[in-house]
Image (cartoon, rainbow, N blue to C red; front, side):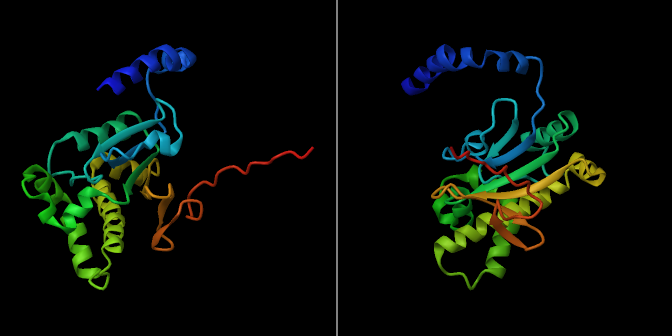
Length: 221
């Protein structure tokens, strides 16, 4: 707790003053670039990963970056998605899974979640992911590779759940909203984007439909 309090003091005394105009502007409202849906895992920092400032990402986090089907529950996920799409008019939604995900490990190994009844119940919204792995990946016996496949398939399953939310369905049908599936590799810092044309996750710089970063030119003297 002491580290957190010291961090607040540092923010107030150092960061806030240097970005005062930014925070004054943010006090007037927000216009985020995208809704970023990812896991609650403490090792994931969406703003650090994307190098975005306050006000640029609308963020939804939960265990396993799961999106319950629209009719399943009137919960925080549905409300956050609707507000981002219908209220804030975001143009993109990203669902980002990550390597070494504890929620996906629990999906593969329910015994690791003994005594965690709420977590087990939450993971029922990823049952389709579990079945895909069970029926289509029986040949993958290496545990690390199996977990990676689970993380990737879960991103795709949750995107399909996301499509069925009424605000998302309306915005995508108008062409006002695009959905993206990403995975983040904690060990290397690499980000992979699902490429529908290739039918697989590719390093984000190689995926089609993803804007390429600007080329940096260095002057020679």
